[in-house]
Length: 348
Image (cartoon, rainbow, N blue to C red; front, top):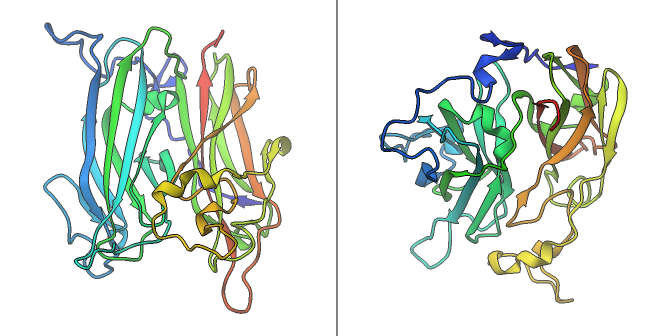
């Protein structure tokens, strides 16, 4: 079986849980006097920042706070995140805008995979919001990410990504809004387990991708937050337009199988300004796809791993069945997948 490096690094333990990931673990001082704990607050992470593809100058559009990496296609910012002390919902808002040319067009008119993710020391990145841009159009999305609350506090490093091959390509805004809500519920433990930009037939040739995880004691239930979308390098057939089974296992036993699929992509025509229009009246952006639509977010799938999954060491397995292998032209199918394990207190 394919094996990914362990994500079990625990910096400190408090009551059986990693203190660095524990909601309400006293990482912040009390709310200052005169600053109501019930006030809604917003943290602006990215604002009008440029994502581009410039291999020899990734920092071309750097600012005092935001740095371009990975040939410019990833922007990075670190800042302190201090949510309200009261229970709250966390709403993540991301907007992507294509950069116009002087001739009235845009530099990148294609649909591009993208995300905003959190860098966690010693662990895979965590996708906060996963999306695909429209064909050269502006999109804006707001997603409830309260289940990531234990990670979204303290010193945080955020990464904004668009899989563009243009320079300049896109501008990105991203913010987190903390809305006090006495009914808000969040896990007490979150462990990143997987972030894979290109899961291929070759990478699964020896079996499922496997990841060890150590579950702390005292949890009421354990769930998996799973984000997935299927793609291909040549724009035809599998794996973008053919449904494939995703199989998830715990300790070698299957716990969940499903086929990611979206058949409602026509709803996003308004954002897909540069999509191809076919003689039969359909647009390229209309086509059903493997878990995504041009111009929309990819929603996480929640998998219940047990009530409770026993404390101790376990191995999670991830496999996509029938991924198209590389052909003579070098084209192939691939999947973008991320996952975190979340532990909930008893009674939740």
